[in-house]
Amino acid sequence: MASPQQPPIGVTLSPDVEHRPGRTLAYRARVRWTDPVTKERRSKSTSTETPEEAQQWIDDMTNAAASGLDPLAATMRLTDYGESVMTLALRGLERKTLDPYLAGWRKRVVPTLGHIPVRMISNGAVDRAVHGWIADGCGRSTVKNTIAVLVRVMEQAVRDGIRDRNPAVVTGWQHEFKLAEDELDDPRSLALADWEALTTLAAALVAASANEYAGWSDVVLFAACTAARIGEVSGVRAEDIDRETWMWTVRRQTTAGPGGLIDKGTKGKRARLVPLIEEIQPIVARRLDVATKPDSRLFVGPRGGRISTAVLRDATHWDDVVVSLGYEHLRRHDLRHTGLTWMADAGVPVHVLQRIAGHGQLTTTQRYLHPDRRAFRDAGAALSAHLKARRSPDGPQLRVV
Image (cartoon, rainbow, N blue to C red; front, side, top):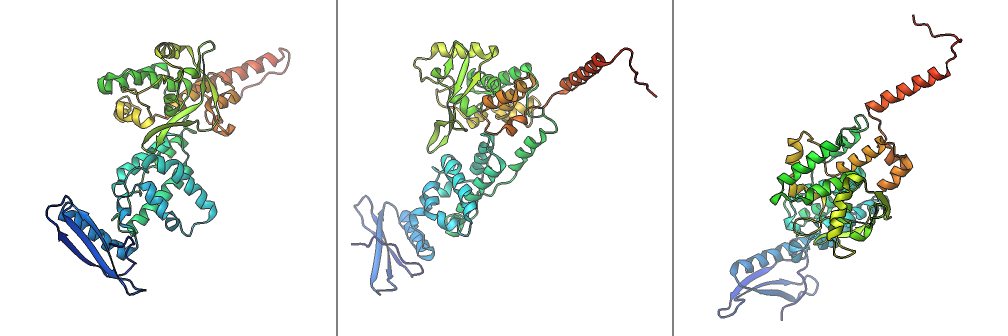
């Protein structure tokens, strides 16, 4: 009976393939070696349908003897492979670095890419995952730590001979954060100018989608007018809406998980209230009227499934549409920026805006308090009126020279 153990590292294997006609698995592949400690002769075998499969198994066993890697690692999902090599991949790192790396692996890499076999991880898949994390609102350091742990795990795959190059080395992602930083100098750069611009965008996205699915317009309008993340829009249930006060209790969001999209708590782990303005009340009312159960989703894709920023992007050809409208750098997350900017310009107090946005730090909310040119003019006019009111008609007058 063949031994279940793996060949020790560095031993020389003697392979052979036996053809056994009449059987479904007609080819038996076997490798033999001499145990370096006991000097006993050991063997391991398997049965396959074709000679090519038999030879592939022998090649995998030969590589295993050379590297010490379980041959099954080559077909492992990224999640399983990462767990098996994480200690090796992160060796030499200090504790203060390990924690954010492991958090990035657990919270972002595994839900997004963990179900894909290690051999199937592509540079494009990693690139889309990274830009998805950015669109979900992850900060620069969070994305950097997440990429770093993925790079280390895939570098281990290169050393193990599973991959010939590291597909996790991606570039260009920091450019999106540069755009976000630029808003401090040009606060309107990442927000749509007005309601007409928003409705024009929504209509163009519907026109570009398959079968011109009208639901995408509702998603875009709702996201902008509530300053919500796309995942939070996907998480809206009928029971979350108070039709008496037109308030939405944000309780959950849709995000990537093992095997697909899942629902989980909000980013801040706390429920929050968001007002539903008159412009979107008819949209919400129409969807509430057809909801059959309290937990019915209000916003779904054309086939009734969950939506995400990536789903919205792909289904509406977002990138092409925004370029055609002159918004080359507009991201799905900028719908949230648009709503918060409009609320700030409308005079919503910063402490209220913080609660609506769900920001943990007030400094984050203050980034949206950028007055536009009209507000600057109004401020100057207000100061002038104040000085005129306080100026005595009999007092000294300012002389211009």
